[in-house]
Length: 145
Image 1 (spheres, helix red, strand yellow):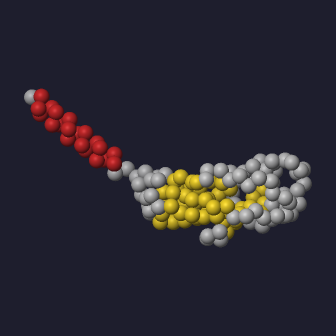
Image 2 (image 1 turned 180 degrees about the vertical axis):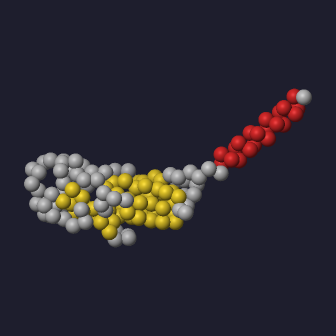
Image 3 (image 1 turned 90 degrees about the horizontal axis):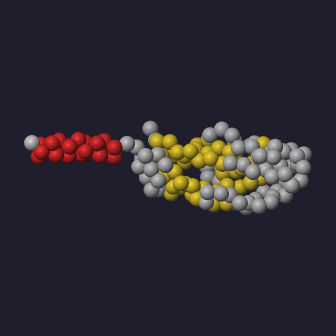
C-alpha cells in the first residue's frame, strides 16, 4: 500500500513541477540602473549615455519606456522650452514623455538590447538655481503576443 501512495505522490509532484515550469516569466534588468549626469547648464545637451535592457525572463518580450517630470517643477516634453527638458532616445530616435512608448520588440530570453539617452536642459529656468530636478525613467517589459 505504501508503494502505491508514493507513486501517486510522485505523479502529482511531477505534474505540479511541469505545470509550474510552463508559466511565463516576464523580467527585465536595466544596466546601469542609475543615470548620474551631474549638473547640466541651462540650454545645453549632455553626451549620450549607454544603457542595456536584458530579457531575464523566459518568454519573448517587448520593452516600453517613459519618464517623469522633474522633482523641482520642470516638465519632460518633446521640445525644450522654459522649465521643460527633453530626454532623447537614439534608436529608434524619439523623445521620452510621461506616456509609455515602444522601445524594442521581439527581445528573446537572455538577449540584450542596447540604447542611448541624451538630456537636453530647458532654455530658461524660472524655478531657481540649485533646485534639484531628479526624474525617473521606467522600462517596462511585456510578453510578445
